[in-house]
Amino acid sequence: MAYGVVGAFAVVVLFSLGGDEPEEPTAATPVGTRVALPYVDSASLDSAPGGVRDADGPAGFEALLAEGEAAAGTRVRTTLYCEPMRSVAIRRDPEVSVHASVMAHAGSDGRVPGAECQWGSQATAPDVLLIVPAALAQQFASMPEVEQSFVRRREVPAVVEWIGRSEALALRNVAVLQSIEAPADR
Image (cartoon, rainbow, N blue to C red; front, side, top):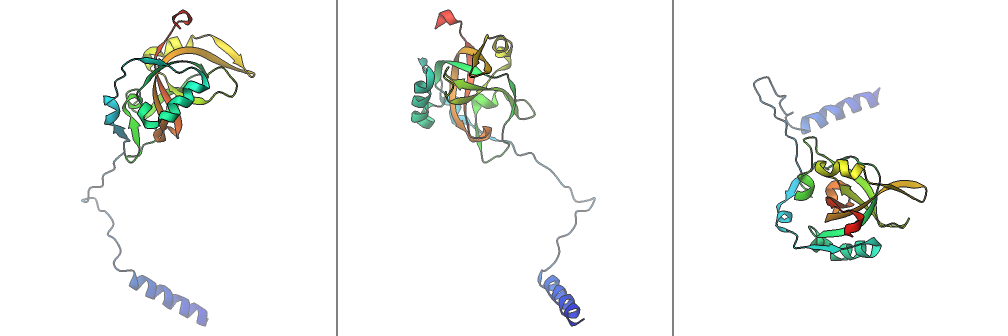
């Protein structure tokens, strides 16, 4: 019983040391909610491409990675091997910047149409998340499929805007589809 008395006394002392309790909001106190939108990297708007460079296969991919942030916004020609499109969520955090080219294709729900792709025809080719604009979705979906290590993927000869690693898209390497080329154009 002594433990009960000491325990009750300790609880009373702790509550009295805690200070005043915060007031509960009343009907007269307005309570607002705000959705945190991601920060759009406006510097990426200035990275207008001067031309298109070739970056086929893993070697081209590695060259883009080696350039780091300086390569963001570069237009490159490559062949991607892609899975079907799906909706991909953008991380909604004001502390995380989102490249303007990615945000240009985001819906009101903060999602972008994307496809998981391999940068080259080898089974061990590096992965990239390809953002597919609505205007190119039908053409993308009609690209011929090929089989790679028992997985069917669309072969997409494309010009893409390289974004690079994006924290807003789960630290994936990202590219935005600019155009799909005919095999004869390559």
